[in-house]
Image (cartoon, rainbow, N blue to C red; front, side, top):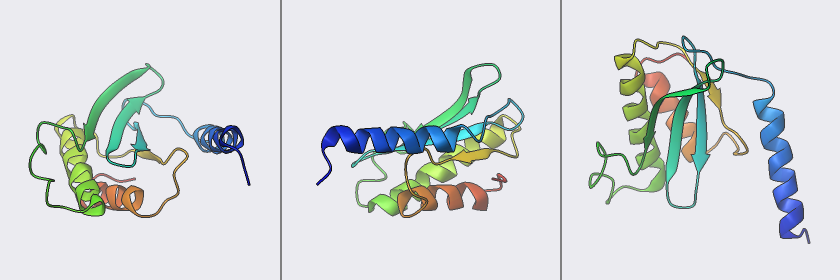
Length: 122
C-alpha cells in the first residue's frame, strides 16, 4: 500500500504536469480549481502579471446560505455560474481551464460545464 508521502509526491507530479502545459493572460486567464472534501474554489489567474482577476467558492458572500440544502455537485455548478458572472463583468469571454491534480469528473466537471453554459469559452 502506498504511503502518504508517496501519494503526495504522485499528486504533486500530476499537478506540475498539468500546469506546465498552460498559462493565463489578462485577456485569457487560467481558471485554477481546488477541491477539498467540503468546498470547491476557483480562481481566474493572469500568470503574465501574477494577479488574481476573480475568484469564487462555496464560501462566497453571493452563495452563503443558499447551498445548505444542495449536494456537492449542484453547489459546484452554482460556484461555476458565479465565476462566469464575475468574469463577464470584467469583459473576459475566454479562459483556460486548469483542473490541477483533480480528475475531470464530478464536481470539477460540473463547475467547468456551468462556466461554459454561462457564456465563457473554455
